[in-house]
Image (cartoon, one colour):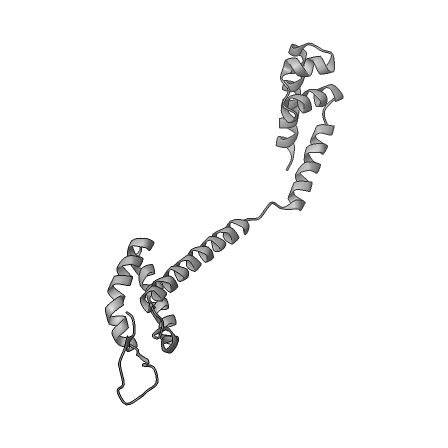
Amino acid sequence: MQAVPLPDPEETEPTRDVAVPFEEFFELQHARLFGALSVMTGDRFEAEEVMQDSFLRIWERWDRISAMDDPVGFLYRTAMNLYRKRLRRAAVAVRKAANLAPEGDALDTVETRDEAVRLLRTLTPREREAIVLTAYLGYSTEEAGKLLGIKANTVRVLTMRARNSLRQTVEERP
């Protein structure tokens, strides 16, 4: 609500604005602001918190805000800024929470790789070549056969032997 100037006939100076008391301003604006914030946030409790924070900021500076041309507009701008600030903080919190997940244990990665290398050493060189080309590098048996200079069927047999050998080695471990 705009401040209304009251003329003072005894003074020759320009008239000064008389502000509406904050309590009256609050009574006139709180229901409308709450309705707007409820629609915007989709949550009555969040709307109430933003509204309360907005009125608190306005009340703290009421002596300056009441003299403004449009204190209602300033109230709404304050409420919108507070709501946007809450959204940004929530987004940052979500990003931080998402980054809190462990990226992976480097020691575990090294131990797993070491175990895989040790297991592959138990295979014959031809079995190792066949399993690495097909299982690790993703070549088909035909492509692996061409790379090794053997038939695709031989690659399948070598891969099957390698898998069985690795399975037995793992099962025998304590």
